Image (cartoon, rainbow, N blue to C red; front, top):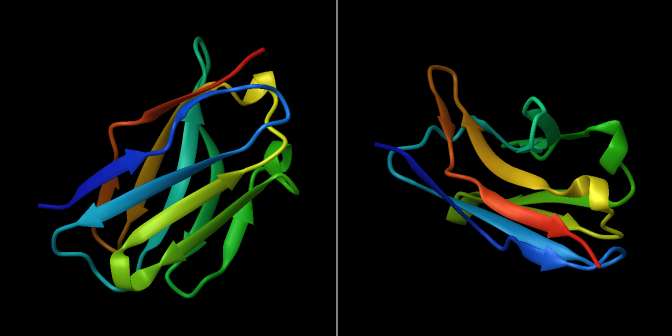
Amino acid sequence: QVQLVESGGGLVQPGGSLRLSCAASGSISSINVMGWYRQAPGKQRELVAVITSGGSTNYADPVKGRFTISRDNAKNTVYLQMNSLKPEDTAVYYCKLTTISHVYWGQGTQVTVSS
């Protein structure tokens, strides 16, 4: 059974930074995509950023230039460095692991950007 555990969320002022982490445990294919999605109140869950096991990345337009996704394959961990945070970045952030045959989600971590 694969489990994803997120950490690093919290309350930050506009313009501040946070770093999210997501550690995957269990039997995990070496070929996979890990990513971050977010869901704000009353809105659908949306892509934030994804990274393949080979290191290719893709970002949603609203976060380009502010967020950076990275991963440590040896630790099966993905990170999201979030800089220049805005109130509109407030949401529950979810980690997602996609393999050839399965999709796994973390439990989510709250990020609140407010003064």
